[in-house]
Length: 95
Image (cartoon, rainbow, N blue to C red):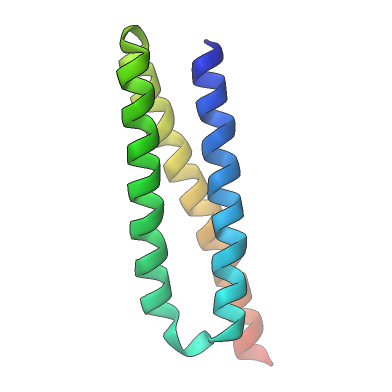
C-alpha cells in the first residue's frame, strides 16, 4: 500500500511541476502552443509509463491496482491542466 501511495504522490508532483514548466514556456512563446502541447503530452506519457512499469516490475502483486491508479491520476491531472491552460488562453485572448 505504501508503494501505491508513493506512486500517487510522485505522479502528482511530476505532473504539476511539468505543468508549471509548460505554462511558463507557453507564456514566453504563445505562438507555438500546439507544438508545445504535443511535446509536453508525449513527455508526460513516456515518463508516467516508465514510472508505472518500474512499479509494476518491483511490486508484481499490486500490478492491477498500480495500473488503474496511475491511469486515474493521469486522466485527472490531464483535465486539471487542461482547465488551467484554457483559463490562461482565454485570459490572453481578452487582453
